[in-house]
Image (cartoon, rainbow, N blue to C red):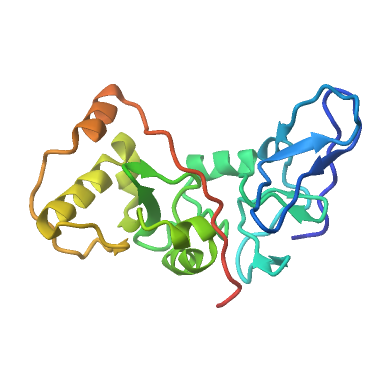
Length: 222
């Protein structure tokens, strides 16, 4: 980070907002007004930050409270909203082809990686291979939830709501009877055009499944 991010003001009373911070369970999606009689119910942490004082791009990742801070994580004051996503940066990731962990361009590499769970692509976008492997080791949800599959993708796979990715996962599962935790593009899969009904309906309707949300944390290894 380039320094402490400024604390925003409450949109209702202009009083100071505070991040409800608990290192035990990372409940940090919202900020709340410190004024006792303010009617404000809480503001999504990712919607009140811009670029000032936020994590910088590249490596090594900055460390806060013993944890490396991903590029998409909102920083408020000297605290990190671990379970939120910086909305402005998320838009930048979605419009371009940037790594959610380090903020660098994904194009120099031929492929990238995404996390998929139960037919849904995790919010936050793709990652470099190095970032993906370290994210698996540090993010509690990605590390502990066995439903997540980390699959290698091409930029063109984003078209049609990641339909090509879901097809590859379906084919692998039909061939092997289960899904791996990590699925590279080189993994052999049979031709298998039929997708599960829920995925086919989403693709036909032109909608994207509601994504899971997990801020990816990354270590400062190089």
